[in-house]
Amino acid sequence: MAIKYYFANWKMYQSLSAVQQFLKDYNKDESWQNVVHNRHVGIAASYEYLYFLQQKLKKSWISVGAQDCSQFLQGAYTGQVSVQSLAEIQANFCIVGHSEVRQFLGQSDELIALKFKLLIAANMSPIICIGETLTQKEDGMTLQVLFDQLEPVLRFLQSYQGSVKIFIAYEPVYAIGTGQIPSKKDLQEVFYFLQNVVQQVPVAKNVMFLYGGSVSSKTVSQLQDISEISGFLIGKASIDFQELKKIVELA
Ligand code: PGA
Image (cartoon, rainbow, N blue to C red; front, side, top):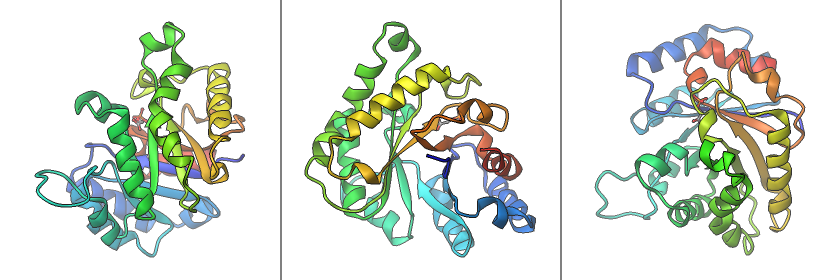
């Protein structure tokens, strides 16, 4: 499958002036339309910029999404952001289970699956992130860890028949922000495994696989030719418009 999806994960990198600069660079670029033709680019921004970005980009080829959401529908949950409110501002997708929220906020596989289900119910594409640590990899645990992280979601998908596009992003923890990409052999093994696991659910054809972790214009050539990968989740390299464009052009 050719690379088609490019999701920028802006994490907590961007200030308002940096977001405005990104938009300025985007607006003055003349070749972007040709570069993204038949491809899909999405930006997962911090909540405070979502509505603004959505307004600015609604006629563009770039969709806007969130980096996380609440597992609750609505109510007295201070500090949380509901899927319903994301849907209202026409967010297109939402990341769940990023290793940083698993690590810093202690979110469990079951809790992440709750968010996943709410997103599906709201017709919003979830991007569920999974990935092993270096120690788990060295202990030969990679496939088991990935399966365990996905298991509650797979259980739900056994009885799901809808048409929402679902993304599974494999992001090895040791590759995030380090400049290191797993070997092609390791990636092939993981994606082959994931594809086989997902074959068991009725909506397998709506499930796309992304790779994330140190994707940049320098590393993207190492990520070509892995047939199961249909896109990337890009962190640090995505905050600069020209660098993001270069990745889309190269892959
Ligand atoms: P990175 O982050 O591209 O900066 O390594 C990717 C991610 O965490 O989604």
